[in-house]
Length: 540
Image (cartoon, rainbow, N blue to C red; front, side):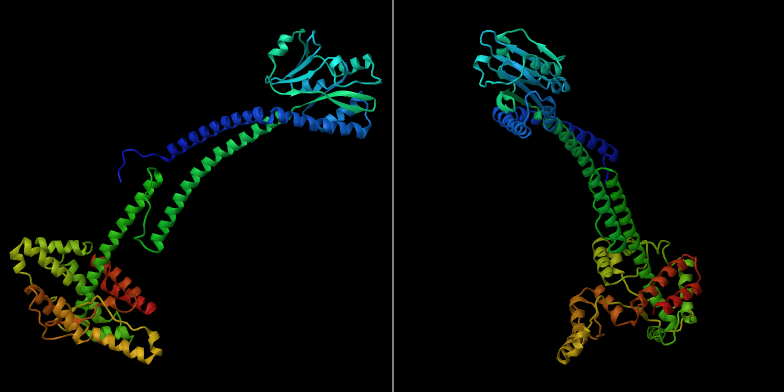
């Protein structure tokens, strides 16, 4: 798979980091906007502000009552304020300030503006923090005050002392102007005074709630944490996806190794992992092709050796090998067969130099093209070759013939033997042994599809041999080449067994592998025989 552009893992990681960061930043500002909008329009709505103020006043009044406090008891007032953080307390006795927690304002870097209307006596106290937020406290003049302090016992000096004790460095008094008060009308929340009964009388108390600041601070931290987690989550998701791709590829490679070499390899993407998958798939295809070539080569060699071996050993030797009745691969007759095989492949020009590596299909094309004088194959090859030559080369078509392997000079057994293999077999399930009727029926069926009648049917309809040899088969509907091949295969020659159709495959794996090495001149026939016998004794 050739691509003009590949997106490397490094580039992909950079893109993911940038996109993740951009997503996190946008989410952060969107969250901040949502938070500010919520605080301004919901949390700081008039109804919610009044509700919280009333709750604070009720809590404060209960505290005052339970502790039998005086309005001038600043220590007790500060103790309550310490338990109720983010509040500003202002207590008036008529026109005089009894308590002012100015330190709370200074702590937040805020300023207090006091505006009075000389005409009406109305006073507006503005508290502006360093973020520009303004809180308004409205108070009517003395004549219009909603509360009256009787026998308060608080003198002007005490009021001044209470005001002074709160600290006044951050207090900026605005000139008396009603216009300024009108300018700030409607900004942020309004706070009112409420009458509270102290031990020394009824006083006007205003409690300003700063919990919105805490909400903003906590909200900002939470938004930052969530956006950070979002960024990290995007990175983790990306790496998790790539790891899953690698794990999937690893599992597919393990399946190819342990289960099926033809198993799938997922090729997806344009990065190094995709390239790795492509290379693995290419390697797999190469291995499959090589295995196919080797399989076909050693199968051909096995078929060849089976016929040649029969000419030296005879059929009884191989049957004895199957029955474990004394025959051995190291017997002289079999070693002679190996020696002749090596001689034909290494010391003569009978076979192509690439015989061990060429596929069955390639060898077939050698014969069709005239690069090979003979070809070892089956009926499937015969039908293909005949059909191809009939259309392309009539002279070659008319000269197609069939012959057995020539008899070696020192071979003493059947000179007309050749191996013929069938592509099917019949087996009876051992479970039917407990049922005589089923067993009898199975045997009858097996005999029917392996007996002379079935073999005759297969021969006359498909020009193939069955498990039972038949004579006088009518092949008149087939062409002459097909007829000749049938007679050559099943009538005019004798059958010998294919070695690797019997005994344990572990034995033949060793024999066929060593046979390839021997045919390349890298192993002696005696060594091949000894290795095969050792495998035979260990595995059969």
